[in-house]
Length: 607
Image 1 (cartoon, one colour):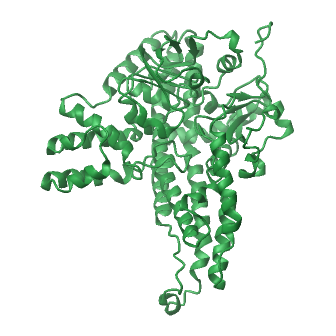
Image 2: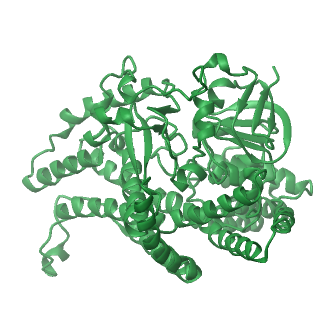
């Protein structure tokens, strides 16, 4: 800050230099993702919550489509009073976003009247509408699973002739590919249909509490809605069930630290009835619960548990050991429920009038009603559907490999979805003419160069924010999910000489104080490095990291607010958490001793 105490501006987008050796990064992304000159006048922050790594070209669809849907529901369908949509830009492979606020009082009032009618209808009919949502989203999952990739054989099946089908297989190459993209877009519209309303309900309750109880900590408000059962924890619960089953069947000796899943499964097949019983339970759990991604559903290489069994098996070994020793595998949900009722009653009694208590009850009841969706949607959308979506795109990559266009199927993800469209058109034409596709000579050098640049871009350390600090931050998701507030921005903007080099500040997201050894992970694929009793320090966590929370003492993240997934999961597992630090992964090193104070939102470096 300057001498007057004002928050200084972050670097302007136009001031961000290209990373040496990756000056051609813009070639990976469409024109509408590039910063424009006028963007220097706006505030942007790095969305490391969803995009903690540089973006492969195809994977930018996981920004393009979600922000299309979020803005549509927020600005156009429900007409949120103080915010429109979210815009995104890419620089050096990293996604920066900004929310467009509504600040004119008359416009806020106009939109509020529209919002009240539309949101009110959803809140009043939440259970019924949510049941319909689950039917629709599972229908979409069924549709994406049913999509096939044409084999393009030398000759069509005779049934095409005898049934007078009139359409050859090469037509379905592009139709089915487009169908994948269209379903992904629909999924995200359904994804955000309820989500912003869920955040909005919480924001209203949060602001009521802050006004009624000026001294109340943010996490105390969040704890009033803790302990609600959600299906996002079901994959981890399935692992615990399988661990108990292994002990019951007497096959627990196979689940040792560092075991190879393929070898364990092979050995179980030779264990007679006991092994068969466990394998039956395992297969039952895999669909749908092992469709959970090891990431948060935004990168093709964050594979599902079904595709990389090493992740769930790493947790299984620990759970088997605890089950064998008679230790509890249950999250402290009952304790959380008792705490939330006690906290709510305590603050409710402080209210002066019956009208205020009635408003408190109504808002808290609505928060608890909508909260399960805030977590449950992730399993259906980012995990189950998106796992299947990436698998289908990979299958189209395999078609391109078989046709000699790509070296390997996963190279398809180095192409933007419009470039994949062109490559498939090339294959369709070649199959029809009896010639050969021309894509190999054109695409393989591009793909090789993009892989090289992504390797270079991984080492870049993105600024947490860009541009001048805004006067208003009115988007509920920005506040509750990413934890972007005036206080966060002030902390991020301080010069290094203004910081206590021994402390990192953020949100106290889950209570408690512990000391331990830090384990800094900047990539979800590194989660296997976590050791028992360590303190996780990362850009962001996701509910799919549930098994990791069974091993660690506390969690610290760069990005996140009181309703971020790291905060929610930490509270459900009863461990301290500090989120929204902006810089923990830069200032803390693996092996350092740290003290995590989840009450005050401070991480103290002890070494």
